[in-house]
Amino acid sequence: KELQTLSSLPRDYNGWNTAAEIAVAPSGKFLFASNRGHNTVVSFAIDASKGTLNWVAEQNTGGKMPRHFGILSSGNQLAICNQDSDTVLLCHIDAGNGRLTPSGVFAEVPSPVCAVFLPAQAGKKTGDD
Image (cartoon, rainbow, N blue to C red; front, side):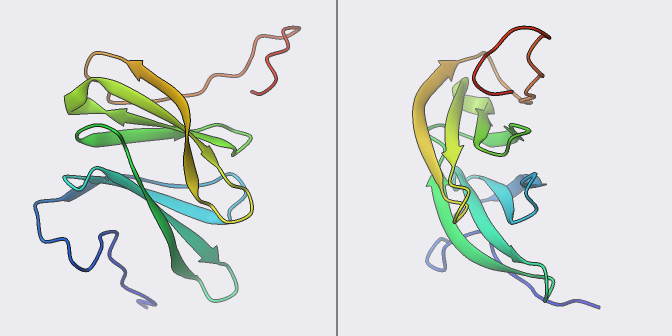
């Protein structure tokens, strides 16, 4: 049974767009989706009791054609691969509201299509995963 239909785009946007990645934060509280064309990643809060989503915010990816994004296992960072502009943008995820904020890390990577966070090596402290 369909519970809800939502757009990941602003009402006034009428340009070309396709979706690429959809993922749920490790906390289960937020869902993220990338827009290829609008060049954004949107955040939705998950209402587990109703099984519905509530729009939170959109974050510009700083590049073109966001394809995949990866979420750190701790749930506090998200890396967005901008395939057509050869960049990866790292964002912080606000644990309270699911909003994305650019971290200031913007890497040049040839045609990135997948971001995966690997666990730190045993015995090495990195401050995160």
